[in-house]
Image (cartoon, rainbow, N blue to C red; front, side, top):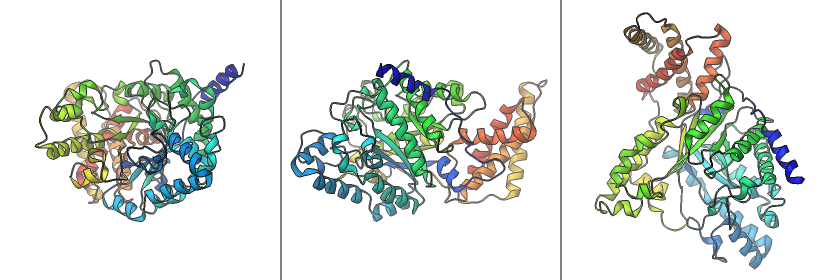
Length: 502
């Protein structure tokens, strides 16, 4: 009976995903908060900060052979008690990102971090009731305060945004240990109670953090298990959006693509309709070192294949849907290296990393390397600092030359004329409206210019911004039969602004 009630309750929360506020306010340039939420992000993950992973930071695993957060905290509490264990954990959190770290990140072009956290870290552990971490909630009494002060507020001082990534869920969203729980089986998707609790957690986070300008998104799951059909995932995502929108109509809600991007392109498109907007961003992870097919390719092949296999073949070209690449690295499996030897390894890694970055800049609204730092030495091709020093990682170019109004007018006229000439050649009897194209072009150019005025920011969530401005146009001038022309103009306006300003 209780299980049946839970299913009904979860479905009721998921019914009709609520619309979000437009990503931009009609008639106004973007606010600082809107820029943080929609700019292009060159970022890095703070792996093993609030969700421990033994291979990255090993100190807190001194009393266990296990490799999950639960293994670490349970063994330390057993030996040292709650108070001493809390001190050990807080020392780790307080020293993971120092003032020098934030300074280095900003100097090296990083404008966003993805912060993996566990459900046990939120609100003094108040969401652990009935789950494995409940016994240890006292260890995490101050975790959320530290997250806000030492991470979100510290990032803001350097104009760095934060994705709050609920990485660890009860039972795990997949079978890997990075869910934080030992013996994780991906059972989260079969546990209605856990899903309801985590949807409420997402809503609580949104409400508690809405005062901060630099929250780039709230991610409600990391690496969801592949499923077809993905009914449980869809229900959970809808419930999370519903809870978040009760207190924050604007913040992006980030979902996992479960290793199948187009599945969630279709879901977002279906939920939004042709002219709606639900404020959801889809997270795709790009690793080319795990599958047998990737291990069978040389480093050159892996590099060459990126263009054809990263966020491609999307329904309606992904219309209306923005992505982040929440995790990626420069790691290539040894079987791939065996095909060419290690003689030119650094150069091949450099080409691979730069190719990834170039594609992510074009196809996502942000990309976050895994991972920032290691306790001992460096993590090689998993290591952000090492790859930066070797030239494999380079931030995108910031717009630095502000184009004049005359340049805008000239560019808009030329683009509209080229658009009109093209369609006359394609279909001389067709009815086209180059003025619509020009309006979209001009609107995009001005938006891109406004973003650039804030620390050289570039537009990232283009689909969200385009929807906001198109609806603004329709509201003031009426419905458009040729809205595709306006949309194409907007895309071209962004492209040409960066050609003129970088």
